[in-house]
Amino acid sequence: MEELEASRNTITRDFEYLRDSLGAPIEYCREENGHHYAPEAPVFELPGFWMNPAELYALLACEYLLENVQPGLITNRLAPLRTRIRDLLGESGHDAETISERIRIQPIQTRSAEHQIFDPVAEATLAGKCLTFHYLSRSTSTDKLRTVHPQRLVHYRSNWYLLAICNEANSLRLFSLDRMSAPSVSADPSKKALKDDLDAFAGSGFGIFGGAATQTAHLKFTEHAARWVAEEVWHEEQKSEWLDGRYHLHVPYSDERELVMEVLRYGPDVEVVAPESLRCEVAERVRRMAEIY
Image (cartoon, rainbow, N blue to C red):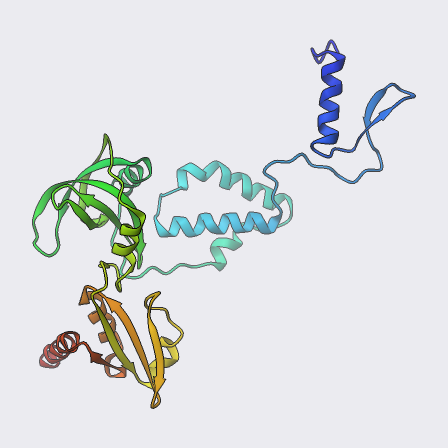
């Protein structure tokens, strides 16, 4: 007890806690007037961060997936943990390199979001702080200084976007991280939009442009294209049906830009039935394409 620098009562309470609360196989021996570990008891492990090989593989896979979504996102932060996991797998006779060899992510049409941009944007979003940055608009080619109240980081089709309340517009706006420069996190707390407003902006219409759906596209696919389209979810509120051997898909949308590109991807295997404005826009694109070829 002198070596432990604890009283008999303290040690007794510790033994009782190990036995009664943690389930440790500790027994009291009257002959020896003391406690000992039950020799016939099964192997006991203290509660903590214990994982079997399958769980370790799953954790490494998550790390690999996140690193491919945004290179550098967690490399430095999780490096010690990743090294320890690989050591544990090696000790159990498993190969950690299996993850990188057998899982592949192939991003397409990715626009770079450097960590000098991503890190402060993520910090402001998670910490609930205002964010200032220069933004070069693709549509107008103008560079403006923006002050925003970050609400959500959105990863869509291999690219990052920030959904935020813009001071200038005084409403929700979507900013592409690859068009930002010189972001700076403010000490000022950001305003919070209602969850329903965020969901309505980001999810009620088709595609990243979102916004509250104002129209519904009626698309008619050939039987060949339907082999793929019928298994896809274009929108959580879409409706579909088979009529006369064709697959009819009804998709709510507010901004037609991305929907037009998606329709053109299927070429002659899809027809825009309605609305007329969407049908005319697709027809005009096809006419201009025909002039090129």
